[in-house]
Image (cartoon, rainbow, N blue to C red; front, side):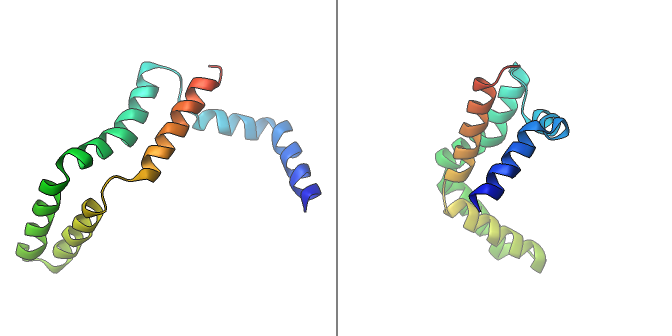
Amino acid sequence: MKRKLRTLRNRMENDPAFKKAVDSLRPKRTLWGVAGIVLFFFVPELVTYIWQPELVAWAHLHSITEPIAIQRALYGQLEKMFADGVSRLNIVIGTLLLLWVWRTKS
């Protein structure tokens, strides 16, 4: 098993198409690259942290007053999402992306 993983890793490290694909996924070390990571991963969690009670109340109100059943269900899911609080997964992914941008050469 270790030999298979080692062989796969060596193939990935030496494959120019794989390197090009990984490089195209990595956000660039520019103002827009970093701002995109911050706006996409950290700002929504900050908003949830600051206004969680208001967001839960708003979603709950709409989940019980919405006339269309599918929209009631969507507001119910939104209420559960806001009630769960800040997503540590989003913060970890955002932090890892920022570290990836910071540590790699442009």
